[in-house]
Image (cartoon, one colour):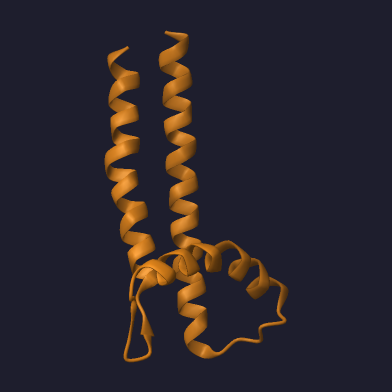
Length: 97
């Protein structure tokens, strides 16, 4: 019973973190279209959160086509896939215990 509750809590926290990071990626991508000031503290925080993941994807896959970078889209799709599979599996496992 305690393990089930703990596993359910971990699943909820992971799901929330995935959702928050997904929104951070979306916001960073949308703000990037308007050429923001790179010295803005909010942009620096968003860049520090997003750019390492984007760089990892860009270095392994060709995700820039005609000047459009599709790495944020790939990140959002992967995060949603993780949320729909891994997190739901954790919820089901917690429910079965």
